[in-house]
Length: 252
Image (tube, rainbow, N blue to C red; front, top):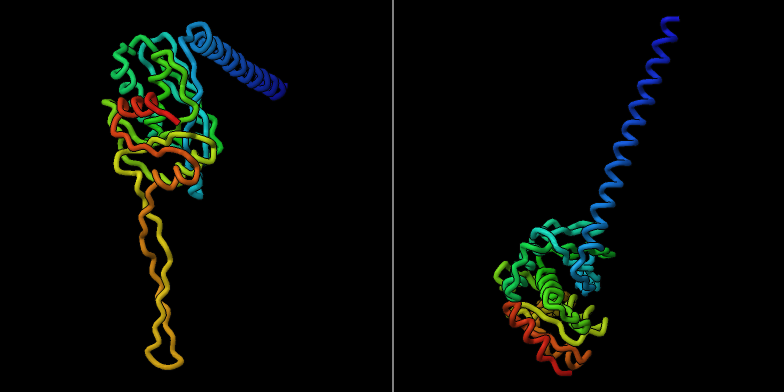
């Protein structure tokens, strides 16, 4: 009889324990939904969708799109990427905010910045997305329409200086194929190198042939290549202000 009571007590305890966990998670989830809806809807200052050039695991370019919201807040930066694969993306986003706010001469400590990216690429964002982030933030802060004909790649620091990145050709190609008219790259990166296979045959003795294979670097001028083949301008920029000037002075 005593053993049966212990079993009943044990079952009751476990039932109460799991019921308590259910109510706690339900409460937290409902409060999270309420908090999030307040930020993104009731206090929304603006929203913009902008292109991002990403690289897949097998080094192919792909165009993704980010959704940026600026809300009244306290200077926080929130970022959501699915799948999240580049931990440096948060740092790049924060630098982009500082650079765009400085150029716009706006006190951004009164706003929160919320970025969401749904990515099909294995590799997205990271430092190379900094310039794209900064452009989107600048256009939204200044209540301007984002130029959909522009794609960009480049790191950015808090002062708006743009730094070098990799996979320039692949990113330019996917931008051109997506119909972009301007592709912004860091200073000095409009020239890339491809490697051509070169075979040299040697016959030291009759009947004995040796083949030596070399890969020779050949420069490719991206500005010329993409204008001739896609009518897309590849433009070098060294800072955010220069990037904005290139876009606003664009003529087809």
